[in-house]
Length: 306
Picture 1 (tube, rainbow, N blue to C red):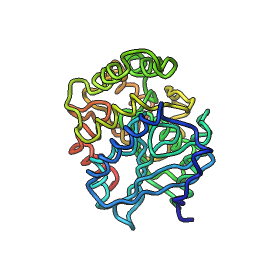
Picture 2 (picture 1 turned 60 degrees about the horizontal axis):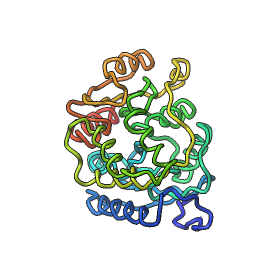
Picture 3 (picture 1 turned 135 degrees about the horizontal axis):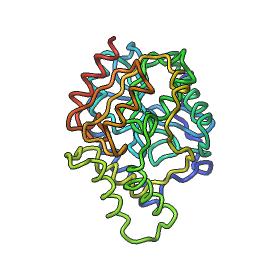
Picture 4 (picture 1 turned 90 degrees about the vertical axis):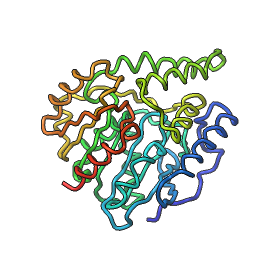
């Protein structure tokens, strides 16, 4: 079936923005990212049991499909530095994860990993994708690993970029990003929201330059976005990870901060994914594909070709 572009209707959707003004600010910032999108693309919408999911499709029409899943609040726009390089040989699908402040429109929250699996299966079925390469960053990496465990026949290869928890605990993320965001979501009237969210974003960048195209959008989604899904990342067991049959590439930024101890995260990754290729990306933060697209794209292309 062709992905539908029809909307489920505003009366059925659950708000993922703190206000109408916040939604406008996010959509304007999103449009600026799309104005800078480096290649031709089309906006697709796949209707699922959890609402309408927005996807940015591009790349080589007859190429093997690559599905990209973004970090929490990062939106599908966070892949704008990668789609051109990967799209020369592959068909690219950048998904706006439902339940977050982006262009997808949820009708009910995701409350379990099986809900996520159901939603993802409906998306790839709707796109008529039988098998794919799967790339996930942060929260997108956490869920991508679960899909690879449970859909081994459909995942040709798996790329995890700074996956949230998954291989190692992330107490530092809890302190610097999750708790401040949660506090303002529960108490929206507290002063200092903009300052607190910018501080969280700065912490994640670890002193490295901000992407001038995408970073304003991330600040807006952190400031004005709600999160309705109820699944928090965790570290998978070795038995669970053994369910991943696809080749795995694990990319970790040299300046990654969410795990607290990068060396410990690397060792944990080796223990849980003994056959994975592990690459530390120099001078890269949590969103490594934006921080060092030259290196990440090179690794992606090499891995996908193999």
